[in-house]
Length: 239
Ligand code: ADP
Ligand code: MG
Ligand code: MG
Image (cartoon, rainbow, N blue to C red; front, side, top):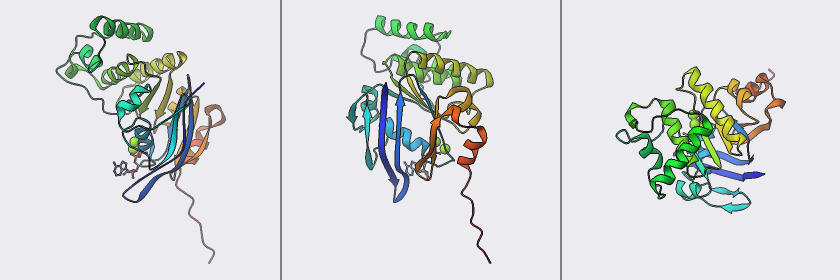
């Protein structure tokens, strides 16, 4: 079951091409990892998918219909949510208020949805705690919950583990695995190649503005992925 298909996405900033024809497809229940060197355009691609940036060219198809996102709320309507590297948390609001902000459903329905996901995911989170008391990992959970209770179908995690402890990473990974087993699709952006072998089903290497390699993770070795990220070989000219 195809969740998202993007075709020939182009994006430049002030004449500098960053994405030069990117194609990819995300399926239900899939963890799709995207790797690439610093500045390769990973975040730009994810910002296009979540409506933060508009592509210069290209098509996006969500569950069979072509879409054009002008802002994140357009992506949200299609169930696409970004869990940013730096979560947006209101320090003086409780977790409950932070999660449900802007949601129009009544309090009982909000509480029911939150409790559903807390129990599915096995989290023990005191919803009355204030934003300012949350660790980065807990802030990411709040962002995840924000999407989940709004019926997210696709979650995008942009380098989520850079500021997490080892045990927080394990708990995030088990959360992602539970969510994908329920049909969610996940884009997972990382610099850490070992994480791909623990978590992802599919991996794509973004390089020079295009997907230079892509396939099931089982077809890749660590060395092959690393090689895909190496700078171009410098040609040695004959004397
Ligand atoms: P990555 O996430 O792979 O490290 P980014 O997508 O953040 O890479 O950036 C890719 C390139 O696009 C970089 O050269 C960056 O400076 C540029 N870029 C990204 N966003 C903007 C922007 N809003 N304005 C100008 N340049 C940008
Ligand atoms: Mg970067
Ligand atoms: Mg980035």
